[in-house]
Length: 564
Image (tube, rainbow, N blue to C red):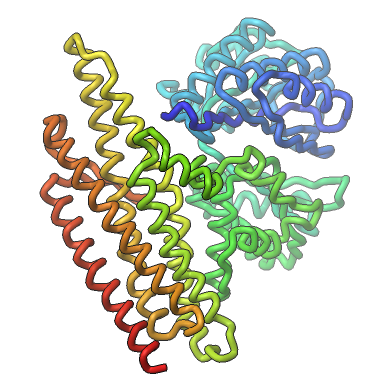
């Protein structure tokens, strides 16, 4: 990991207080005052009597922020007086740690265990581990519903059982606090669908949909979904409240549409939905692609895709859904591209011209290739919707979308190439006196070379997918922008040739160092192993394909210009 890479852990503590503003604010202030922590969201529910806080930061500060929040809650929340719609077992009911950037799930497991140990020791309260942090635990106590079964009211008897001995803290019941569950998990989406219905009707829908269903003999329809139905007095609405624990297995739009189907069968109106806390951008874009494909829409810009989802899921039905506040990447300033691709043209060019080996030809190749795809997209957009070419709208839509996608796929490679080179150079500087040091150095050098080969090879593969669409533009694109297409073709071809040079030089390094017998190459969808010979053959094929296709497109353009 580069020293310049962001290291971000998300923490989402759920406290059993959603009505007393002074207590809610005191907990929020405790997080804000923690150095290195950024509080992103405070979502309080009156009927649930529960507040979900979302904050981020490096691992150490995030653990400290969670502890500071717990300390504030310990003097303000008394579980003996707590009532609310949401299941709960403690003042700080659950405190998950989630990897966002530059960290692994194992890093978050360590965060949760440090937090749990310190919470138990300092406040003298029972703490249980769940999800990834409960690896090796008995099967009956790995998930939050398992641990929270019986809720606060059953804790006194539960804690007397040996199989429910806490992972940290005392094994006795603490009436004022209850117990806390902490662990590491993947990002989930807390998502509620609003109904004009009763609590019982909403819960019936929840039982039909959630994975657990009504029990082992009557499972629900949606995998990776936990759900409950409740009624909110403050909005006069019932809700199917869901945790989408794997939004790739059950995406937002599936959860929403299945709720709509269930509600329709009961003759109940759905009046929108809401996201509790924050959600990943990917979850929103998955829903956008669903509606774009379902309705045959032509939407390219990310901001417009987000707006489409807000409209289709009716996310602003209760309170306004503000993407800049609700999407975690927007809140933390996380960017798919790194500092090189996100900076100015001047700064990138000047860094290329500086007395440092990186960024170098690999990053330049990625940059120029992305410009080639971008120019193709531009020509398509200048043709699409133009009255003179309106009979070609279908062809243009088919060509623009993949070129626009290629542009975005190529941009991150600008930074990835530089990071791969830096990792390789850092590995070469590692000590190698002992056998163990030599082994570690060899593994680090190999990893750097693998990525240094994978990045330009990925560039060549992405570029390969552009040629058919560039040919369509050459044949039919707006003639007033045809010179831009010529420049785009030349840019893409230059990027491919530059990438090929990088693959070959890094393959030679891999062979010369004798660190590898095969080269692992990565794409955005899978990982495969290739011998150096196989990589060479693929690169030769992609170069030949580039030469043939670029010449063909340029000839088509030349013929159109000659014909007047």
